[in-house]
Image 1: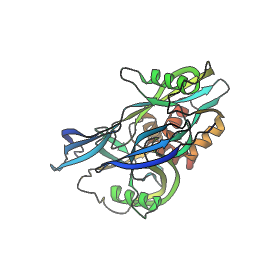
Image 2: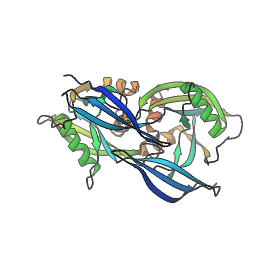
Image 3: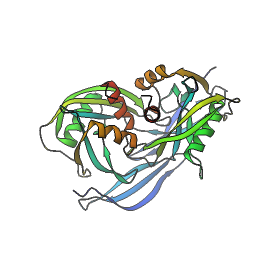
Length: 174
Length: 174
């Protein structure tokens, strides 16, 4: 079965802080169909473990879900930056910790978004300084024992569940 | 530490097939700040297993990543519909299979989206009919042995990685 679509055109229809694209495709049937796509920058998120296997998390308000969530550190991958450098930078800025950061994997954020999400792990993490937060960041650092973190992942009360599981899988800690 | 933000106002700034909200908050510092939020409907996605522990997947083109991906069945939760009914409906429409569908968990799709994503599992699945696809759906049904599905999840070459892990975790199949 031919499953491939052919992109015919693309234009930016909302150009605010978020971006929306209108993409027109020729479908396998020969019909043309347009779809709106969220053009979202790539992000890197990190499962960060101390030597004693505590997971370093960041409690913060999230304006999409409209609640305070216990999240993994992470943020946008800047232009020209590698995912592991972005993850290490966000970890340091949000928590004051450094560690040995590696890319454990990546995945697609959604069927109608352009975003790739990089799942990083950081091992042997230790606190080396204070947080360096933006004016719109209010973050409480929390160290959670690994068993409690697994429970937290199962609860789904965070936004980067796949990064947690991909990181644990990579480190053989599932 | 006070982490709570107070929402002061909200307005729709892009009202296409995708929706973008502008939300203004009073931050813990007392400053006001506006954020753009993707207003995205809730979705239900399903880890569907046959009696012989094959995972039922749907190979299809995804217009955000712009490639053919081997996905879990799923889609939007319609108004008034429960997540398990939505998951069972999508499973039947996309694959022609039925099974015992339960909600394994849920999570937030992102910090800047309103979406809740429901992770469902379907056990004892069997084929009862043909696919019933929309005019913009071109889907090949694939049964993958469980061990290969775990590898597929680790590869990140799909969009609902968290649903796969949450489902396996719920069924104690990690």
